[in-house]
Image 1 (cartoon, rainbow, N blue to C red):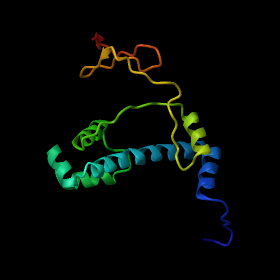
Image 2 (image 1 turned 30 degrees about the vertical axis):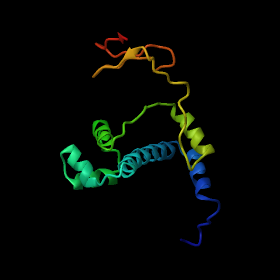
Image 3 (image 1 turned 120 degrees about the vertical axis):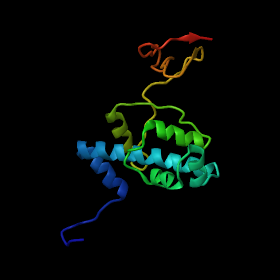
Image 4 (image 1 turned 90 degrees about the horizontal axis):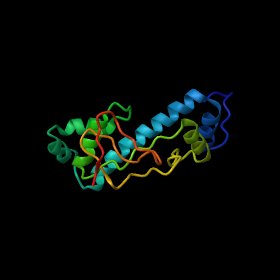
Length: 157
C-alpha cells in the first residue's frame, strides 16, 4: 500500500460507494454477485444432498472433473439447461426466476451491500388452473396478465 492511500470505513462502505457513484462498476458488481450466488446454490445443492462430484457426474453421464470445473466457474458460462440438469441430479429444481429493474436492485444493494438482492417488484403469481407443458410458457406470471409465447396453448385443468 502506498503512503498516499488512506483506508477508511468497512468493505460494506466501499461497496456502497461503488454502487452509488459508478454506474458501470455497479452493474458489473451486481452481475458478478448474482452469478456467484447461482453457482454457490448448485454447490450447496450437491453438498446438502450428500452427493460427491463423482456421483453427480455419474447421474449426468459425464466425468467428475467436469462437475468440479462447473462448480469453480463463476464466470456465468454455464448454460441454463446445464444449470437445471445439475440441480435435478442433486434432487433440486430452481424454483423461480424473477427480474427487477437494475436501479431497484442497486438501491437495495446500497442499503444492504452484504446481501445485494431484491424481492420482485410485484407479487409474482402462477395461475393454478393452467398447466405448463414442455416448451410452453403459460400462466399468470406477470401480476395479472396471461403470459404466453407464440404457439403455446393454455390447457385448463
